[in-house]
Image: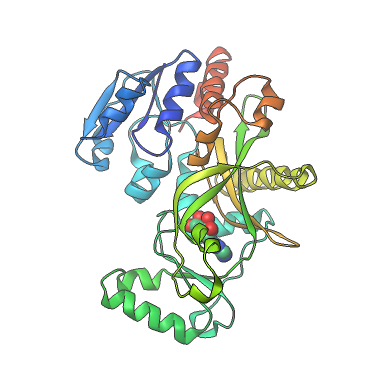
Length: 331
Ligand code: AMP
């Protein structure tokens, strides 16, 4: 069995976890990016590509399973669903993740509180303006009135930073003042259970630097581009809600895109003084799981061994092969 992925995002972890479970590995890399995977010795099987679109023309090996991650969704958009290699997970999940309305619909179907949507004409409170696509928070801006929104949009249009089409697909939400947390879930078909394997928080430029300067100097536009992830352990009394959110999201996914989410998923949460609010969900491995290549406190309690998310994926594949149930995990 060969586990393959694209060389970026969480590829080091994905290939390392597959090797830990004794599976073979392969990486598809943009030309010039190969050396990272050589230096960390996670695979000897490196396929160079001119662009991510080349993935759509790949001829897979007969026993190859592809692990999708955030780069696929951000670069290929809906074409990600056409990758000609069997993927671990439900392809439909990628579509529900990348389309903002669908993403919110799934959370709302699971009765998980999401930020209120706001019309451009009625902005009266601190609001965050989001553009389409999974660009990791790149280009978001804040505003508190409709006038401020209009003037910021005009200057972005004038500067060529956004297109008129982007403006049509804009999403404006109430700004949630809360601490963020990103639990990493894994739905095991073999055990028919949702496992919560770890939690991270994202480290984002420049919003996570703003606390270091005084309020008087604050005429700075915050941005939310992820540069890394930090580990998080949460109060034990919060865990039942976090687990409940994962169970509910899974059940909704089964209703909305049969057979639902398979394997890794994440809910991006912010905890305010009195509410746990979800910004969005992801239907595949998130980069924050790479914090826990040697396992997290939660995965240690569950498995009593070094269980990263990618090792968990490889373990599930192996168990499914033993039980002749591999098809159930793939799409
Ligand atoms: P997203 O693209 O929805 O994952 O958002 C990227 C980042 O923007 C998140 O990690 C948060 O830091 C921030 N963010 C998104 N939505 C909101 C919101 N409604 N209120 C406050 N911060 C948000």
